[in-house]
Length: 468
Image 1 (tube, rainbow, N blue to C red):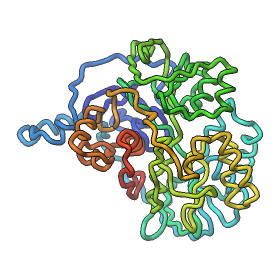
Image 2 (image 1 turned 90 degrees about the horizontal axis):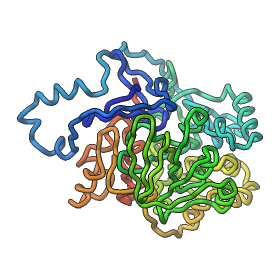
Image 3 (image 1 turned 90 degrees about the vertical axis):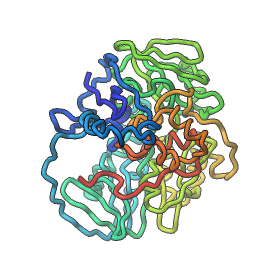
Image 4 (image 1 turned 180 degrees about the horizontal axis):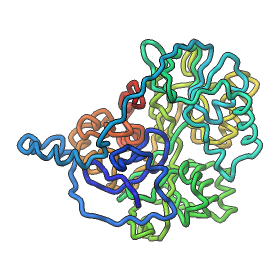
């Protein structure tokens, strides 16, 4: 089994999600950096353990051993996932573009909006939304989205949004860097699932719902972990049980009823412990053990806040659901000329996401949209009423595991710093090195924020992805 070895502890890891820029999506093979997502086989995982020397972040960052034994750095660097040579740099063309509307993101909401706007471009590095892989999706919406893609293909730019600069918004395509100035910016860049924390939460076989939907036909018995309707939907597809953190239930009545009719067991748990034995995972939750092939997590959808925050849109920690949401009203307006739609405002239901774009164009959809929020995204109701209670984190299932897999930062590392008075994500970043690895905080900053109940995350600076 091909896997990437972690930087400090040499743990065997594979991607939990193949979104661009997330941890362990690349591996060094024959001296070259290659896409690990094309090399793994989720239906045939067989990882053998090997000895490794655990090095805590505290030792690396604070103990003076490296001053006295600098040779350690030279030896360690040979084991880090770095290429042995670099290809010649690409000569990019630079083009300036002025446009009325720019949509950032190619999911359901972004394409829904593109259908009705003129003088508009849509920027996305992928149009492969979950809806195209989900067997429970509404086929009418699927065909509608496919039709928009076909009809508006000349308005879609296949590229990465690198962030806001003084000159404008920077977009990287295969051979061109576009500097875009737009009158209106609409963020439709979606959301992602953040993995939970429990003992051995880094071992291969733990994957996001997004990755599961793309591979579910070849994966055997699974256990779903999550507090959202997406967890119930995943369990219905997999015919599996659902574990959620006690006290964090965000399930809608609609999907609880459907899940119960399908015979899905929904179990509240406080602690989870996982071990890998050959091709199987042994999961123990509150003293009960089961053998499975994979764990699929769908805790709650977390907006991809990096691009939004980078564009000077403020955000708040919504402590009811333990997600970070851009400030916006029920219509999705964040600023005079900036909007957030779909997953960028934590909407996961496909139809509701589609409608979130339509209300920007025509207010006749607002009543229907409110109804769908109440039915399908009930955990967000309190956000718009600006009246909610703080609940326990839906991510934390014990006091062991990894907060930051890129830099091997453990629960113990973070708890030690918290006891010393460091209580924000930025504090933990500076004291442990968390959020400084390959993903630049795209996963770990949100998990840390939930545990710490930190009002702010780290600063997401441009460029959001490597230029080369």
